[in-house]
Length: 383
Image (cartoon, rainbow, N blue to C red; front, top):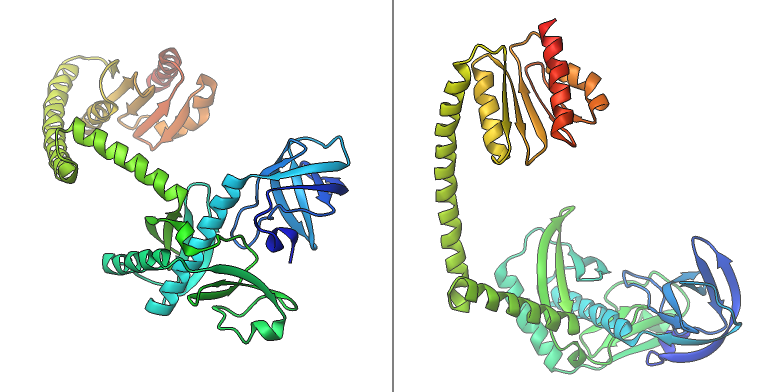
């Protein structure tokens, strides 16, 4: 086993540099290191060597290499492993062991893969569907395991000895095998970092669920991450309840009412826009201009789109500029292919967009550029 596996509590140590290399950064190898390298879905430790930040730690051909923020000036180093990050990674990893063990033993659900993220960790499960009943049962079982204060140990065995244990999966390595044991709940061949007991997990919260390549991906947070999440969500809930003048346990009802009200108001706004489009369209069609041009400085882009659509349905040629979106909407009676013209000329006016023969739209940086493009298009329409 490596030093950080034999002495998981070591946070400061002394060593000497035995190798350096430059590969997309400055890397050093030490005679002895207590930094845990990235492996098995668990991120690498962070910390410092002589005050220089350790940005990454990788295991290559049995050697632990440290990526530094800048080159070391000395051969002798004082190493310091970031305890907060180490403990956090250990907590998320330990939670994975516990969750996977319960799911496999009590629900016959196998874990396909595991990853510790910067915000939350995920488990990919060999399962097609997930339901609230299963989650409730899992959460209740997790509380029992945390309260049981199961001892967590890591022991190195020969391959023959390891295979005599009730391992969760067949080891992928040969020779000496490190086995992490969580009471009688779990025996797993694992090289990662872990807490000393299940009680140190304190709390596990599930934060998300999605289907990925036919499997269920379950997101969670443990220990300090879980308490930070609870604190944040409680503050948000309190502020929301205050904003909508409701009790915390009734916020979801108020939100549902607001959503229904928004649907009703949007419907009314849409009806009012339709009436306004008819009024504006009637005014435009009363003119003899060959190209009907409209500029919208304050209107929502949806209104501009509706007006252009109504213009197109009359068979007239028209341009509608929307200042908020910096977008020019165009329709024509078919004397010129708007999409082809856009493909050929938009770039010289700093525009981008495209369209079909009778309808097109383009985004410009300024109204002046859009106006210049429109004039060029008008000239082409008249020839």
